[in-house]
Length: 220
Image (cartoon, rainbow, N blue to C red; front, side, top):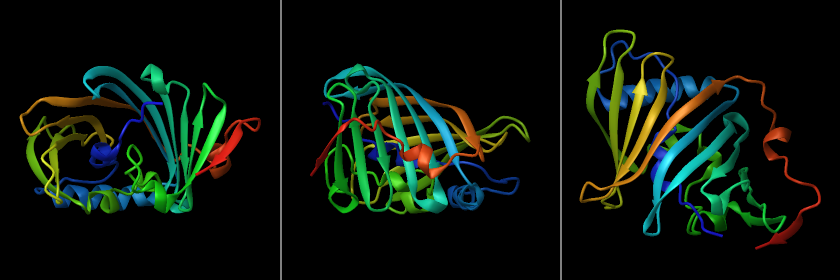
């Protein structure tokens, strides 16, 4: 199965806030993070395209999380190699459901953190400050009128990585609207739109962690 690394998308998971007086990237992040942590649950869709190996492919995934319980779910609709696959995570383990084989691979969170394709801590999908702690973030610009402003942030890894992640955050509803990943030469590696953004929809940990009961369990 082709794995899709979500590491560079980490800066994309920014959410709500009040930024009337925000002038720096840190101001925006702080307000976003504070409001996000107050949410009981968060869900959204990421769709667009990304380069996997050497070819550009369609990307479509739905992410659901309960921040206070460190529970998250990623469900893929595209690319074809990952369609109908699901990744469920809590603070202890990562469970990957493989649709074609009807198997669930179970990996400890500690082991998964160093595995290619799972280098992002899935339980932190809605914890902005935690995810951005390993990035340098700057505000590139602001567009739109008051109440409808859009802030464009750019994040680069503190470990010396050259890829850049750009995130557009709208003041209207205070949520991310677009994510773009570029390499050192400026080539676009991923361009994704954020839609169906919802908070406090009544998600439960049981529903987020639900996987087919007849699937074969494989512990790694």
